[in-house]
Length: 253
Image 1 (cartoon, rainbow, N blue to C red):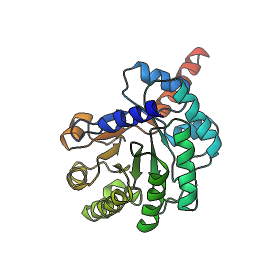
Image 2 (cartoon, one colour):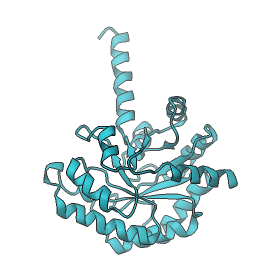
Image 3 (cartoon, one colour):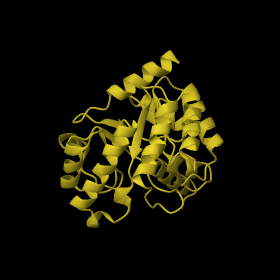
Image 4 (cartoon, rainbow, N blue to C red):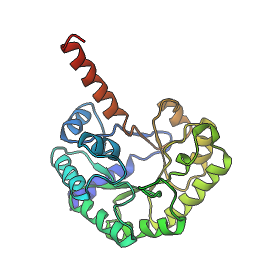
């Protein structure tokens, strides 16, 4: 456990506003080794990629046991810190979420993502209920374990409809999540520079942004005070496109 705690503390130290930790999300041992060999400082699974690579839809359709076994294989294959995307925590109750987190810790994870939406339809959970789920996760994990609280506020409307009110809503959630024991605030779907700036400046937690087609450059995200940048499903999609293109070329198509 001491080695795992050391990795968790090292991972935590990488979250520096203005010098963002870049996580090129992985899905299995092969992708973990490839990303590690490129000089990564830490590894993070992406739930969409893990699901698609194994024939499942995203949204907790991957059985939890399968996701934990996949995590354990990755942890055994690398010396880097590994954080797992646990989606909504695989549980209807806060106690069930705690059980999922405990299994991730046992498998060697040094952190996890927990999102505040329902896996079935993507609607937002009550902020108090989500704070309770985070608090229970915090209770079963050691203090070094990094709980990245994902808010899906910005998935509720298309990017062109994002506004100051949505930033305020995300901040309100972030403050409650911080009180419950979260360590980072993840705001996927947010791409507008001015709104990222507002959120990064006011967030009580280090801000994590996910790369999309219209996301500002890494250098600009650093200037805006972002502390963590995730690539989500993009690495998997790029790899699958490369594979398909190579297969077509090999067949002369």
